Image 1 (cartoon, rainbow, N blue to C red):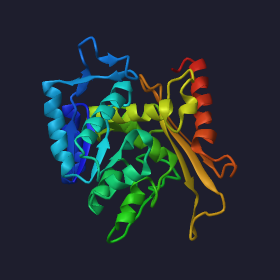
Image 2 (cartoon, helix red, strand yellow):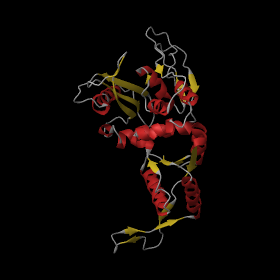
Image 3 (spheres, rainbow, N blue to C red):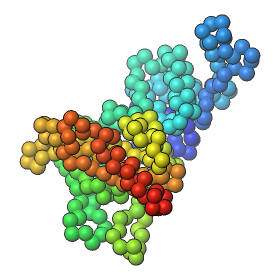
Image 4 (cartoon, rainbow, N blue to C red):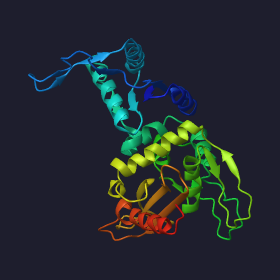
Length: 318
């Protein structure tokens, strides 16, 4: 079993439905402890050591997390992507370490650190059918519902049985193929509070919406994508005039009939949503075979999104 910690009880309940029986999702319900209310909360004579107090509610939460963690293999900290969320995660870790619960556990801050290890370990917990169904639910492996001459459904690894390495690879985007418009369609779920919007070419075409995620989970992921820009792999964009949320991508190029290129050929990308506070645009930029000495998505694809978002701002489209 694995334990995943979020802040909100309703979010915990919703996420548990998607992860299934291999995960126990618990809520911290905010902070689990605070500085002591007494005047000696910070010991200025002892290297400014802090004294903490755990409330009755916090004690109950930590007891529940402790009991679950004792039976788990891994602990995933998925508190909110802000200072409070980081503080909550830190306090939970400190309290569990004091109780010697984490000595044989792996602890992941998977969502915000873009951890392939964490992503892979979640992916292998899904059955073959669950993993494929989840990908198809977001439109991968499915045709775009539009009159487009080059429409392509993409590929999802199709074997009678998926081994752990296959499911891990699918978890972080290998062993499958998708075009930029499919990625944009999937990102529309996070930009539209859980609804996927089918792309269209003509303005007078009917807008098709499909509910994919609960609103709180979609917002949670949008916040995580914003954290990528603030503190993650795209932090070179955090001071731009348009607030961006997104995910960088850097992958070895796949050559039909050969496999992954080993000679410095890459596909570098940045999938974005902006403005973060009130999403209006989704933009996916992919650079085919960038300079092998400068090929990371954050360096070659993300700046294109920045320029285009600023251009749209000048046109008063934001």
